[in-house]
Length: 260
Image (cartoon, rainbow, N blue to C red; front, side, top):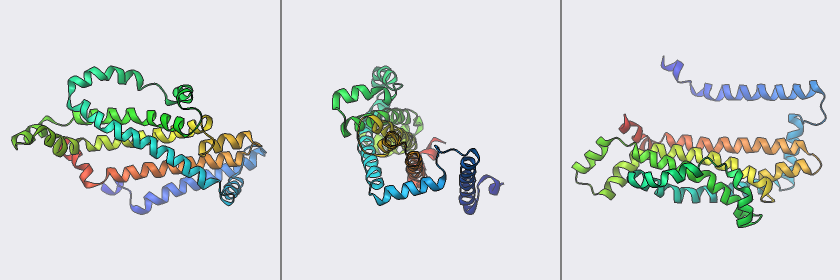
């Protein structure tokens, strides 16, 4: 039963690689079968990517995108985590600010692009602001929900041991809420990576998003467009895998055990 539920190590690698190869084959033969001169084949995309690497363009664009995400996401985490913990710790405060949060949270960061350009102009600051907005609310809500959903028995045990309010929050409530917080950070990072691509298409002149739109507008280089799209997906996968590994750390999973 366990072997059916949990695939072996070789299966975890074999099946994704097999599916990827099948998709590449389908892509290659689909281009050949249609005879299109617009959509590139995998080999053409590979050549375009090699050209970008030789011209020292690709690594610079990847670095710019990651830098913007790191700054915007980092600022959202630094501000969102303590605010979320505070809202979850004080239910009365959460009732006051929650309506405002629920009004602002559904607004797509893309809708803020004109406002960001008015406030910050065309450049890094506008893109970072949009990334911050996209990541801030998922982090805030995840932290508040994580704290408010900690089992009451954990709080009572902490008080019985004579912990002060700050000690209870730091040593009991925060570790118990950590899995939800990490999950919120994971979601927020995915949103931040989506937003940076959109923001770079309109607000800056570097990064993978700019590479997509610039390759489309400058000579209709769809091989470079697809190359940038694939890189966006691969980097997004790597970032998500990093957070998934973090969720498996024993100290993080303590919260799941305490909740059960």
